[in-house]
Image 1: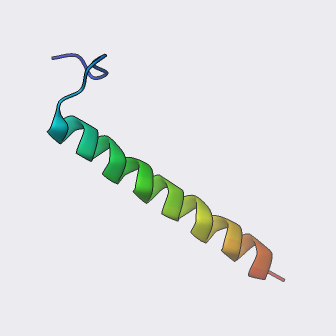
Image 2: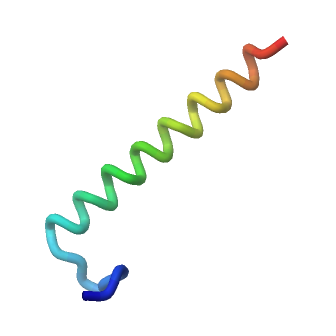
Length: 38
């Protein structure tokens, strides 16, 4: 089973969405920490 399917199934698409949202939240937290750092 390839990691990147041209037509991902529902579970795989949901997994990609969850990973993407975690990555986005992590980036936002990093930016906020950088702005609030002295």
